[in-house]
Length: 637
Image 1 (cartoon, rainbow, N blue to C red):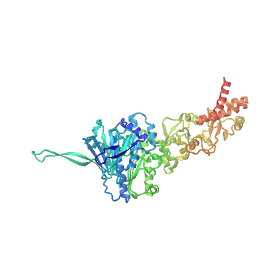
Image 2: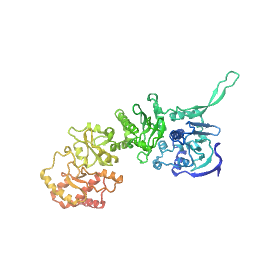
Image 3: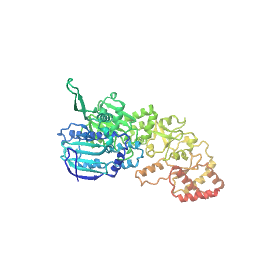
Image 4: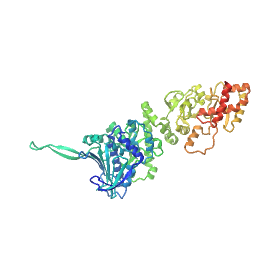
């Protein structure tokens, strides 16, 4: 049916569309005031306008089709108290009908469903997550009962009017608009008219958008004093610039207040919390560039997704180039937000050139060292604050140990681990400082259950000798830690490696005669389990448990095998573990005493299965395990 649009639009048949399901859900959240701070809607809309100006600014400098456009970037806020409307207008790239459907009717990010599933119901907590998913536009429905978007794409003739009352549908109609760009008009709810006050809007802009690199204007009513007593003062409307429009990263650090850094971070990250740390650098010399990096306090929802959104924007001489380039920083620093502004790159640099560019690679290497260096300073100066960072991003930071060999030592100084001897987390430096005088190696055990690791038979002899063992219970550990080999010239070894040091061997070894007798047990168990284990040996690491599984030093252990399977490597050859037995355990003493070697037919499998359980593995034949166990329980009664 025909619809009336605003003054610049024509009356035209409109097409009604339904919102994508996820959008409808988000709109419902917005309308019911998910944000604890409604004023953020203006920050989001201004940020969108700035992005549109960035895109057109880049094209006018690099694309012949746009170079002749009369383009002076500008954002204007218009307050209309008669109609109760607030408008945000820009002369940026604009949108056509396809863009409107893609940008305002659907949410392209695949992480949105994940986001919706993780909402807790706590409005204050959930509100902090919204901006991370690029849904800032919809936040305007917190204050508006209806929204219109009048837009015309640069170098196109047809304008369009998008409108919605957040009822699950939106309309798109052809319209008239003289110039390219976009005007978003909010029809404010009756209880949100505070956002029509000039000083209220001015304060929001100065708080959140002061360092948008484009000028933001508003019409301000000013009183002109009378020239003499016979005349009345007059009022005049003047267009005034509200923000500083200064790219924060280009300013001198000494002139920037902490609050300005925090507000700028919230603007570029859409995060409502303050950053944990910021790192502002200006490099001059052979290569000139400026960087401003932020370490967030909270974890982005897409942090562990393959399709995560990079947090760093690339500029060249203050001209925005891209915010979708994952090569600007290594993937293990994907939580970092911020800006890289290079002086010596060409404006029309392509993505392919970016990935191989010597200048950008130099900036990247220097930036990584700077970020890691600042994290190290934080760790040394404020251990509590660093621990807060590490609990949020430590798992990601560890990924760097796998591939970033240039910064391996710096990363090893930053990673923290759980310990068999102390509460909390311990660094490798702290571990080494507490090593026993005759201890030759740093030891660790991997798994996914801290309780199992703390009580693992593998570390019994270490506990008996008061040797600390690092408990690595994160999935990434099984992949990255075996790549490390050593720290500060000290070997790093897994406790389940068959090639264990002499320093943990028992001092009171069994006698030669007992060992000779025990060989009968070894030979028989080896024969019984020949299809399941690589070897059966006397253990030097057990003090209480009768059995434990270890692996040949050249074989991947159970945790590594599981990780490889998760990475899609399902056709790996079967790796058999080595079964080690505690020759001093009373089970074997009684078998030798009674010469009941026939019992080994069941006991061998029970020893193997309980060793598997201690490792966190599944038992292949649960029914047989239960049958054997019940048989010996009955005998013991």
